[in-house]
Length: 230
Image (cartoon, rainbow, N blue to C red; front, side, top):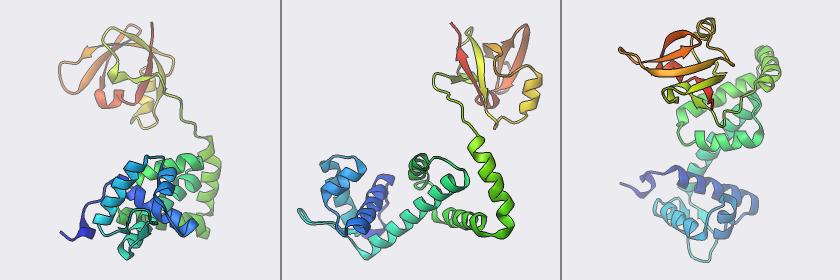
């Protein structure tokens, strides 16, 4: 296998992206600069640089600045373009805090390939620039900042509740299908439920809500977050 076709881990992609950003800013990238940017140890940087050099993506010599090869520059450009596309999608369209958007983009970019990224970039540019998307831009500007994600720290999903332990429903995800049906059953924030066990047939669990026994799909219970009561 040609060395520039060796597989790349997400960690190595982060190193390559960091090198490109440092070179763009300082025109030179030393090992200590890379360690400082990524918050890692010098030995970790050395191991990563050796791996990148083995793939023909950088020129690495001890006590000398790191340089990108032509293939390294091309690969870094792809990684950075993916990162910037997802940052823009999260921060400009979904109105996510820029720091959170950057952190999330770092995770997303390693699992989403170039074909999807290219389509997402086209979508972002269309929403940002097309006159017939003005109404959508106004909707996103008004609606996205109002969406608040509840703090689920200390909560568990209903399917993880131990048998015989009562719990208060705190939050029901909007991703729960048929959420109105569950509300009609009394499964709403503030209600107290108790897990009674697994139903005899299918992927179902039994819960008690007041004096009523209900059966729920495990997949649905995963969207219902509860706080265990003492």
